[in-house]
Amino acid sequence: MQSTTNEPALFTRLRQHAKSVQLAEEHSVKHGEPGLRLEDFRCRYLVADDIWVPLAEALLIGHYRPVWNVLIDGFGNHDPGRGRTTQARSLWDMLHPGRAWAAQRPEAQKSPHQLRYEVNAHLSRFRIPDLDAVPVIDDEVQEAMDQEEMVFDLEK
Image (cartoon, rainbow, N blue to C red):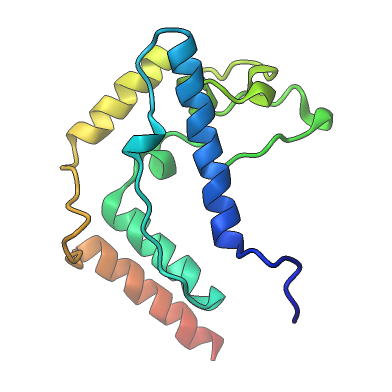
């Protein structure tokens, strides 16, 4: 199978994520509001064969419970196109405005105020992870790994 690009998909996707954060930052600065700053973001990645990506992603999300994966959906969204103009704005775009295409969508049912409350409640239940520490495999992660192993065994 031949690649359709000379640039790895991972870097393309990271650049798209950075652009979303940058647009939210520019919006915040323009309106004199607190918000995200691209300089506050760091990225670590491990290039692996495609077969391992879903397992690694599930384990990391299960362990760290990041807000954008478990509460505020829409960070990685792209413009859904003109055929879906009635689709509600994502929770990410409600909380972090800046993407022009999202501003054209109807507002989601939750207000930015309500979303901030939910984010604070979520974050108060979890301590900020030390990303330099090796993750401990807790019961929830072990269960996810066991289930993945059972599925793999069934596929043999």
